Length: 222
Length: 222
DNA sequence: GTCTATATCCGGATAGAC
DNA sequence: GTCTATCCGGATATAGAC
Image 1: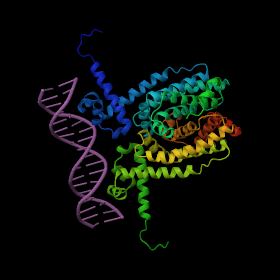
Image 2: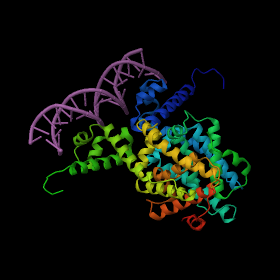
Image 3: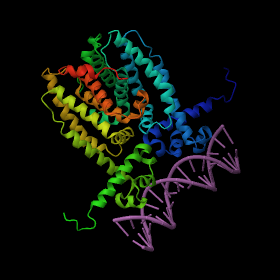
Image 4: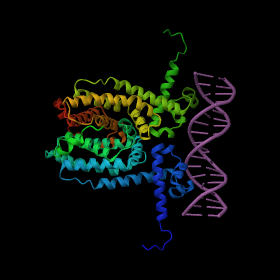
């Protein structure tokens, strides 16, 4: 903890982060094959050979990036504990995912492209991490249904619906902005969208316990 | 119309279709840059040079494919007339989109990747075709809201929600199948999903007029 | 640890025979 | 119209100087 050392692993860590951030941009814009190491190097402001020094190969860089993304993701979603209250848990789920779409759109996009292409590199992760996560949440939801706290809907597809709708605003950002005639999302836009999704989905699930916030959140936006 | 001619434009048309079908597969699996003309040629069972003969360049092939896709799409969605009845129009919209996801998943995937990467080649199409389409539908929905036929929700985001949820089953097919433990969709799966979406979204919009079909359509699926 | 220069390969495109 | 052989730019990866 003293300032004595000239270089700890800090420089190395800093360079890795710079490269990963640059790679994220490039992979989003051009896909895996379309991205050149030279472009990543230029954006990260390091010589091309250094990327090979740090990551060995382009594939390794891409996989490191995916792990980086999914690690951050799991952190956020882990503390989505199965609360007692259905409306509260679903609300937190939607809010959290919507915030992730806003703060980490590129992570969502890279993940989406990977899945669209058949998830050749993360099949394992889906089976080992996502599948158990979904099973856990759906069993909690099913118990709510059995107790009559929620309408009898398919919990798995409810999760798909929340994923689909929230990620849409990251992945299809270009289309959404074009159609709503904006240059980029503002925090109010995210609030409005979150309110809309909460309104439809909670109502759709038969969970109406916070109606006061919904009526104004869902009025059309100019 | 006699059989006299040795070759009409038929062979040419047939070859173009074969190449486009092969290109669709390859572009989905590997993205634009990741797809090689050789791989398309092999899949289409024609010599590589013939593709250049028919389409001149890889970019042209890709653009031709996008136009092919969007042409078919517009055809289907064009006859989504703004009915008098909100529930009926939204029902038909969801059913139609869900069927498209089932019958043309690759088209949806290529379109999704194009949008995710910033829609560099179809910006024009969005502004000229999709934007007017959305404006037309939202103005109809707004009139329903003004007449009190529908809860006051944002029509634009309702369209986004329907796009997001239906396309999710095409684009994220790999993930959905992994989590639901299936090898591919069966027609019953599509019916079940359609029923689920209709249930949540119609209820969320406050349109409850066909409740009889919904209760059984939304029971959880094993 | 860092970077320049280079080896090696691959893919898009075309020339030209049939 | 069809296909073989080839050109050439460009990308990954590495060797080796500093």
